[in-house]
Image (cartoon, rainbow, N blue to C red; front, side, top):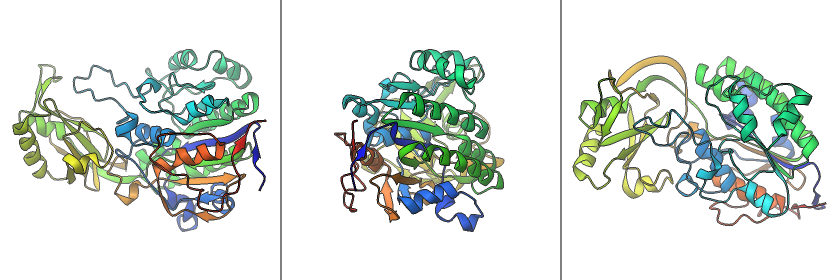
Length: 429
């Protein structure tokens, strides 16, 4: 096979938040009509499952897909920074300056090529030639003013002049995914980047509301499948990935309410935290427990005993066992929740509370339902290749190899290297 000659978007990395691999690989069993995703399986390479990182939530996963390393190395430990005193006003890890590791975007730019991104997590301030950032604050149209200011100068205004308004800041509906697709296509056609990252979150929104495998979830995915087909038609290589799977849950576990009852958290007259010895950093299906004084063995023992006595608790990891997951390196404990439980942020009231059935992720990556997806098709990619189970850290080095650029320091591997890949690297025109 001849090498790929670069023009337009040679490689597109599209993330569909919450896409479970079985939705595509066993689509008939689900009654799902997803012909474009299934065509990626037939025409290219796919994983039967992707082992994710800890925690199995959006921002750490997307940082891993761009760096090839776990959160302990890239520095995006959760969706939102640790903030027990609530001083960050519910801010997230929006800023690329928090990344401690070189990204695939930077590697592309360093090779003299142009990269682009539309709504990829952790993209504010990233070294990207054409960047429409992911950011919100007000959760309404006011956010568009900030998104325009933080994106590549003039890019969003130029695209909006042709297409109309971009979706509001925290609109992660299926309709918003459809609208953002128009902006992705605009960037591909008008700016011709060598590498583009893009993100759909409507499926994740529906799964949180109705649970995995629901009728609403499958209807949403069938809409996204049509959008995948549109982007496949414009990419020389399309890689469709996801960040995590999903589990249903109908009970909330409020660890910090238990910590407060045990005297480990102190609140003021308004109920806000003003001091703490131990605090649970909620991750949905798990929690990172942090000690204010890491050397306080008395508090550590108290927390260990308390956790062991609570219902809804699964594995409790500490020390080398916790560090082996590659999550927050300062964690005193990593606490996995039992299936059916999800985290809550209450500081008072019952520790375990019944809630409306919905979907949750964030469980330990060893939970099979947290497996994510990987589908890759295009020039230089072997047809019908089943890669079996892969690691999320393999995605960045594989795409770097396809692009023909170096990406040093990754912990992953090139998935196509030992599968008869001919000279498939992308060369500049």
